[in-house]
Image 1 (tube, rainbow, N blue to C red):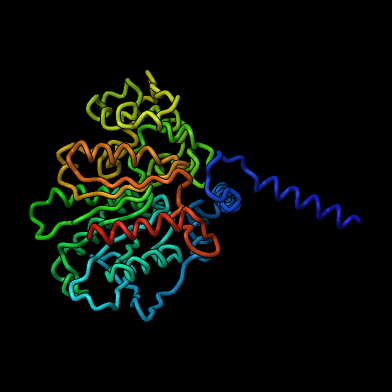
Image 2 (tube, one colour):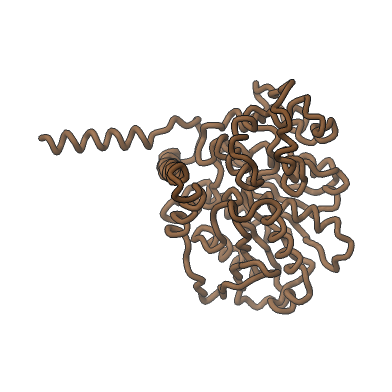
Length: 406
């Protein structure tokens, strides 16, 4: 009887920890709750390890994620897979064994807050295999350096070096690439890198080949407004909580972690921050860039006086290489046609939607793919054992768009 009572208590405690009220409409909420419980547990363990001086919180998270997710490069009858490098940056190469002589190509940057993950993770490996197989293509998944050892602009420079190499004649000859049918892509922080690379290389007149397309999956594109409607609506929706995104930004920028509360209060975009002028503010004015149905009843958070010197302590918050949403219109106009995937239950939803609108204003063709039941990271949850219906749909539609636009 005592064991049965103790078991019931343990089950109740576990259910209490796992259960999280979610907004109606989230795809398969119990799967998301279970994933969130695991992630919250790892985050807390990382916080504990850092407070005890054992290691940085990101190191513990990355070690666990790598232990669970990393798989070897295994070829199949349809795709040859190997680990190598691209432009001096570690990468996993997926080469279709199909008959197409000049193959289409995708260079891909994984997500993980610039501090976690790898192209060798099972979810990314399976995604890139599918793209290579379905498109009879070459896909190179780049393992850029990670924070906290590498901070901005290291990750950007790795992404740029890999992308320049991907566009080169040498790499085209090595893998049989059609240099006129290449795409730069990534999800979350990888989507940030893909957008920044597309801007830089789109404006580079010295290149003999340019990307035909950019595909951005729930990209993170700015850190000046943590009170967009999607940040307000989804601040407590897993798997990417609002404070966690602020923390990842600070790790990426190599900034003082004590600035987290100031970022969350929007002190970095306060009216007295004179280095953040009206022109830059207009580029993330969600009251003008978002449709009414996304703004709902949310109001902008306008801070008259912010933390003195905050932008001087973290100047990269205004650097377009870190925050591509802030780019000039003429820079955006030189980027390739875009695919922008967003999810309703994601704090980053409005980053992607505002960027898509700015691209359209610049004359760039944009395909917006929005999932009303989607959540951040769903593309990585398309496969067993964490298969989600919205994840499978998102992967299929993403690959279908690539097939039709490369």
